[in-house]
Amino acid sequence: MNMNEEHKDCYGSMFPDTLHLNDNVANTGQVFTVRVEKPEGGVLPVCTSRSIEVDIDQWKKCQLCADYESCYKLSLAKIALESAIACH
Image (cartoon, rainbow, N blue to C red; front, top):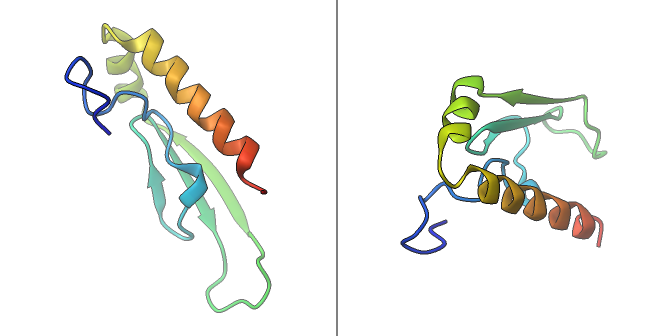
């Protein structure tokens, strides 16, 4: 998402889109990756494993970026809003 020409394309995307997580694959943001493992062909929506991975090298690069503070705040705001509407 390019917010405008003042920001990099990655601005505000440290976390993956949690409203549209895909099962059994890596759901990747700029820094954080989420995996939700579910058995294939199951009838019930059972989650067998969830994990979060952090790309430490990318995190360090993000911290050096001039937009780090505002990007981090925007990323957190987006994930907070996604969490608020996830069950509605």
